[in-house]
Length: 323
Image (spheres, rainbow, N blue to C red):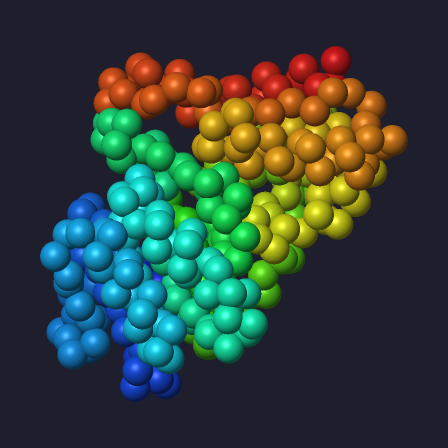
């Protein structure tokens, strides 16, 4: 085990994949963003230059290219970058990548990983602050992954690249510099298995991606007041570990969901619906969704602070559901 940041963990996976598969291909620009971690990609670029492609910036064109490569058997990692940049490519993703296996009766596999950076990242404006997980969740045929730490980024990304199913990995730019203990060995984390980040008995708090660390901070503050919060990180939305969430709600009787997708039709809304349909008898209080309001995000720091989940907002939601 070594202390590594998020991009170190991703780089470990790339090296393993390049070494084991001569057809593994990486496509995209600024895979580790434009912040200080961008330099961590340079050794990979030098070592595997023949299999790392920097296409012209036309998301629709190079997503279609990556889809074709994957359908022809080239296991491909496609970095589109900022999540909203995937919108021009949605036709290829929704109409071809997601449906190829089903439409071909299982004859065409698409071993493609699409990498998107989502979330509100310090003054980047509405065009760079999207979290379109619900759009892809409503596109059957795609696995959806949200690693919340470096160790999970390594294990989940390894599983995604090994999968013959198309997978979208959502990472958050504010996680890139975060560090935790990452095993040196090659390993996978199975999809559809949630992680209980903190056990508790009073309230179930479900969070994803960067919001997991925000939820943990809120839970620790609440513990000082004698409020015992159980924090659950689903890790994947498709497949979703409904059993883990429902089991926790059956124990606590209360549910708060914190997430950076929007309130309407968002991740918090879908999980709320699942619990309302399948675990209603366990609820002692209404479910509370701590999600982004249905509004664009400006570059103004005050506006960002108003719309993003924070420890204070989550603490207020937990106190409300308890009362």
